[in-house]
Length: 267
Image (cartoon, rainbow, N blue to C red):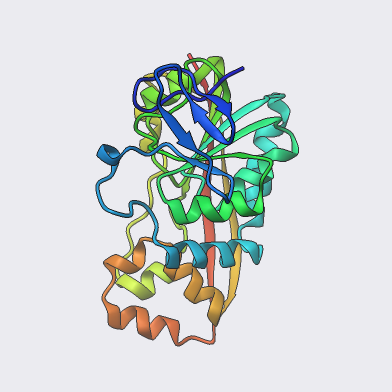
């Protein structure tokens, strides 16, 4: 089954001699790392959209150290019983969560707008289809996916519904109310609770909630892990530089991770 479509004309893509080609003559080479770039120039809002290489490296190092492994396991526990084959992970980053789904999925597509992240993912996990592409206009055929996942990434609701099979599932993971409370307090002083449920109203147009779980666990971070966590989150760009510098001087730092996992089914 051809599941990829041309981002220019929306015709099916087929693999020919290390290129993805459509019948209208558009061709997209598979890079030496193993990914395909289907991001059109007009879809870019900057020269290098998405996370920069420093953010990607920080997140890779933090995740590879296992600090968010409980979240990866919890997501897998939600998806494993679905007996699904085709999964699309929107905003896959360097592929930490995406590759964990390959234990029980036969066909996985990881998609991200940030080329540095997808390059890392493709090098490490060649058994997955990796795409540099826009989540706003997915280069995926209608009704081909069993599951679409978005972990801390955009939620293009209509596009998710379009690519999903009837009764297909969406997995959304967001920060829960007190996520990294002590870290945010150190950066900003005043802390506003995250509101993961606000996404449910947006999703309700095409999906019904099947399960929702909260996951909380303590984080005991040595200095380098703390620096990596700061570098991979959007918080630091909003905080005053002197607060970040002060925080990074801690030799260890304790806080708590809190996540909301939402599994929804297409109407």
